[in-house]
View (cartoon, rainbow, N blue to C red):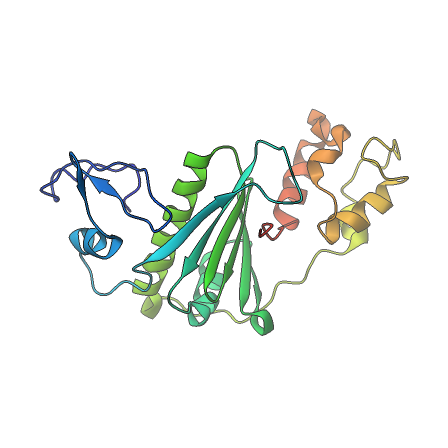
Length: 226
């Protein structure tokens, strides 16, 4: 766990900067720069990490040009496919797709996808948040890897929500404010990630708060990749 934390007690160089280059080179102390391998060796306390280096990219998804939202991607040098069943067991609401060697997870408003050699996260407000999110996810993967002997892996794929199941949670007003002719049409698009919940302004009404929360958990989107 190292983003934004103070390692002055354990690291002779004190607090480090959270600014990274594309190759992930944290800057520690005053003008002292180390490669990620050396930096991670300073804070490694318990055995070998699964992910020791990665390339970080931050971008605006091509489907949302001009938006203030960001996505980030960590290109890995190690295959994490074998760890996905453990993440599936440990992360509430995760969806595992064995044939695709992929797992999706929604953490709050953030859409996250784990692939064999890549981790992506989307719907982030700023670049700093994009950097921190990826770092936390890398840390999470390493933590699960370290604790894998304590976890029973799950190879079960949670079923995707059906259009009718989603429709039952919508307001049924057919107001067309979302751009679709009916709420059921909107549900059809939500299930295949062609529409977003935020496009239904009626759902922001307090009386739909519980429905919105349920929908938010059910509709896990895969982050867009540039």
